[in-house]
Length: 117
Image (cartoon, rainbow, N blue to C red; front, side, top):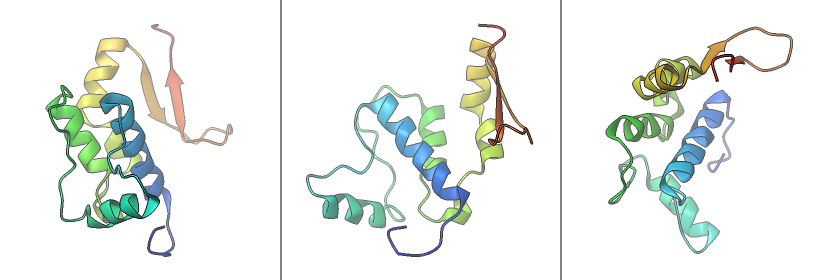
């Protein structure tokens, strides 16, 4: 979007990475005082690794977020990759909450299973 090019579902995956980073880290991955500063950091992210600082976020979730925030869309995780990620699978095992891709008539591609909660 920043480069005024067409985008697809991989942008949603990137947004998921931003949200997950913010929820677990407490601040955005591409901070800055001005919008231009943020955009500059996003555009430079193809050559820079995501900075987690002295965070207590596990290596597994750092790897997940890194794969969600890949600069080039073709290198980013797909939704199937997300659902098969080690951190997500461990979370599903710990909580009993399942997610599956579906072709449901509800308009989205994920079905949640909260029966074990």
